[in-house]
Image (cartoon, rainbow, N blue to C red):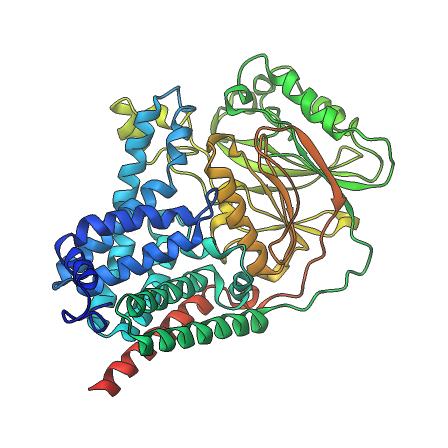
Length: 542
């Protein structure tokens, strides 16, 4: 990227930089990838991310073979994902008390695979734009969008921390309303490329290059602002006053959640934070898997452990005021129906969210669709069980996936869209388009995720609010619970490691944004436009 700017006749410092890029492209790619992940929460060092991306872009453009371009991209991705996903190692300590070092092996192995996607983007950009800075940046931005979209669904998808998340606190995050989070990632790549070229001009004292890149950055900024305005949905005036809500965070650690004898203690924490003096109806939000009891009738008696669903519902209703609705996470069992009724055995489970009114009636249920491999189900269970790895996923059977986004009717409170835990990270897959809700509830169990996972999870939930034009409510056992507006702003939150409750009004929704109407076809369309522009400039330059 710097090659057209930096010549041997310039100052020795410039030549040293060129020599470093040529001599250590792979080590520098790994370092750049590591630094690029510091832009994500909880560090939020986005300027360092931009400079690291700029360095990486310069490295790819300087290598002389497609193999080197691919390997540079892969090493960048390796450093990027190992740092960004370090929280996964903490989750392993809760899986049959596995050592944390084994978790870091899992982080590295997962990163070895995920790094293929930046490598493919780097290879595509090198083939299309080698030695042509503007073409190269346009191509890299376009290919990056496509590879992030691929990462969201290939092998069931794992799209944690798309690059656009580092921009969640900026005004340009609103451009996700028209081009989605993956399109926003392309904008970040474009800005990093222009920053790198401008820095190269400063080093080489090429003021013409500096002025041109500042102008280019201004054009990109104006374009991102325009995309933000185009995609915005107008505020929708609610037909009634927005309902009161209470979000509960009991501060229950993962080590205590399923311990025998802790059931009553954990329920007491939830109950103490739920009771109130006023009688104004409201929606009460509890976390994922808030209670260990089953709420549905019809199971063989031995599965209820003496706590029948009517008893459990009565206990929950005692915490509610007339007109309240409680939305909470609980489990549902699936049975082998070929056996006699009393002899049926459980063969699967659902990670579900139930809505219950103050009259103890269940209003509906949502079953989690995007399940976590090795957390909620064990791929190739017979094989892995045979070699002693069944404890990677707790339990004797797997969770079963639900059908996808659904909206639950909550009576006077409107419709709730549900996304359980990490489902919220899947851009364009969180809302039932034909039955649009008034808000999204994201119950989660972030107690698994150490210090880095919860703030990263929150940042991605904020972008779903921006994309869909809907408020997002999060309730977790121990942080971070939050109320998020349709513009991605956190109104109130409860930090990690604290018990508390949020009493506020449900933020109003907006009319469907452009992204809410068309989804990731807009992200891919934006990528296609970038690639067409790169090809057109290349053809014109011939």
